Image (cartoon, rainbow, N blue to C red):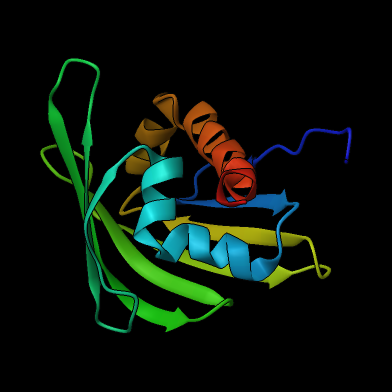
Length: 157
């Protein structure tokens, strides 16, 4: 087992309205892709309920999360491009927040038979919107979620 713990890398250039996020996984690319497309896996690592997930061009998705106080928070979007084990292009919107819709380009890369890499390019409506997202515990949250993806195969065996 690799002793160095993998971390999610978030690159935010000053004055730009996007983020480049990358993470290497000790998972075959097919499993990494399933983490984003199989409702049971999405629910495990995102800690959310999948209400709808249509993995196809022009498909849509809808997730719902309950916070510690019992309040429900919805997330939804439309899938614009879907290439199995390669890429997903989608919009992402949080219900009842001031944040506008964002555009996400997810590219799944096979590095070896047992390892893979996820590259995400997330585009926000404005620099301010992106900077406001970064003020949230965004980096910790995405790193924790990616750590849970890494643990998925142990739960499946």
